[in-house]
Length: 322
Image 1 (spheres, rainbow, N blue to C red):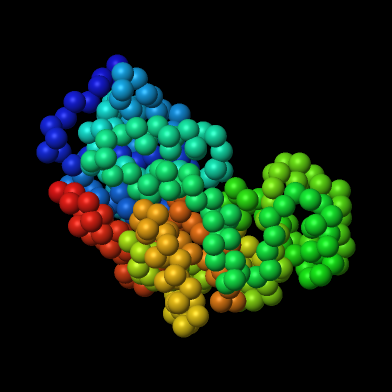
Image 2: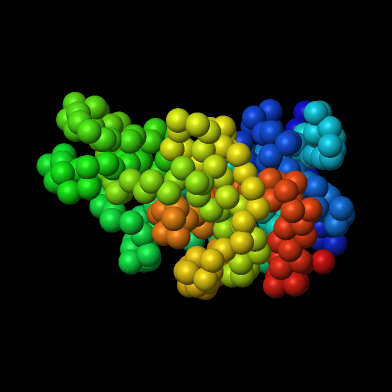
């Protein structure tokens, strides 16, 4: 039987809104890294999915698993108990589910906005809802390769004729899924089907520098904290780790640093605490990752630097969480 958790306000509770725990990879997952550091700081951790949210009697609750996380173990978590948590009792809530950025995702942001201001939701749900990861990049279009957003097949054809080699992405996609490289031949039927599935899409001039990898810049509290390069496997243009890319530590050049600082300042003004900013060939590639930024575990493994400590130091100092 599930019971309502009524806990003393002195208890430090962290609630994590995420995907199924069984789908997380402890070798690479940023959510687990953040949770382990929270656990070391004596947070009680509760984990739930968006489908478990309920708004009733002016309260937002979630059917949760109270979790203890186990470091360096294939079985990386243990469920202590199941409970129905009044989310107003949490000190911090992490939104960590992956896109797609669909109506379920949007509805969850509205529900989390109903919580008292003392509950710190990271990243801010209104900001996450307002910042479409790809469309938001139009604020920095001068730092990007030639890019259009459309579902007009003729506009796409003209763009293709101009650049000969283009990349097409779903605006609300993630993880390198459903990426089209169009070269040599413009297959109108394939692109029409892509538009039918995704509606408005993002089209960019192909950047050959991708063969040397992209760059993921980690931003915490409006500050650059580090970066990795992700090099696609042979024959691929996808730099996502989930698509077989290999990572290495990199140092940003002056141009990348200046652009990252501009983006970071705008993001923190919009209450985005944790973000990933991506470059290809020193150009923003149009992905400003704010919904569930990843890569911190890979960065730790490569550099020995655990940015989850920086994250929690910022959160606890900024929001006086104790």
